[in-house]
Image 1 (cartoon, helix red, strand yellow):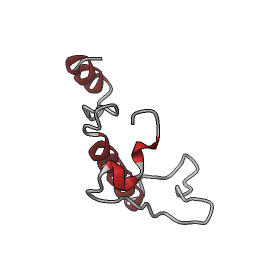
Image 2 (tube, one colour):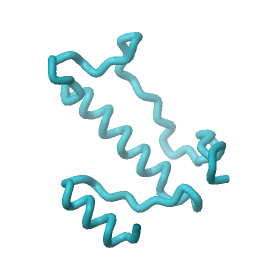
Image 3 (spheres, helix red, strand yellow):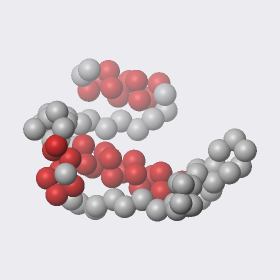
Amino acid sequence: MNRNEGESLAREYSMAFYETSAKKDIGVAEAFSTIARQVVSRLGDGGGRDAKGAGAKGAAGSQSVDVKKGASAAEAGAKNGCCK
C-alpha cells in the first residue's frame, strides 16, 4: 500500500496514520509507543471499559503497561521475528 492509500484509508475510518516498515525498522517502535501511550491514557480516563462497565484489567487486576521509551528495536528484542 502506498502512502496516499494509507492516509486515505485512515481518514475514511477516522484513525491516525503511521508510515512504518518492519523490514527496514522505520517508525515501528514510535508507532507502537504512541499507540501504547494512548491506550494507557484512555484506561486512566475510564475509556477502557467494556459494555458492562467493567474495567479493562488483566487477570491479576493490573492496569499497567511497561513501554521502554526511546528503546531501539535491538534493546526491546523486536528483531527476533521475520524481519532480521
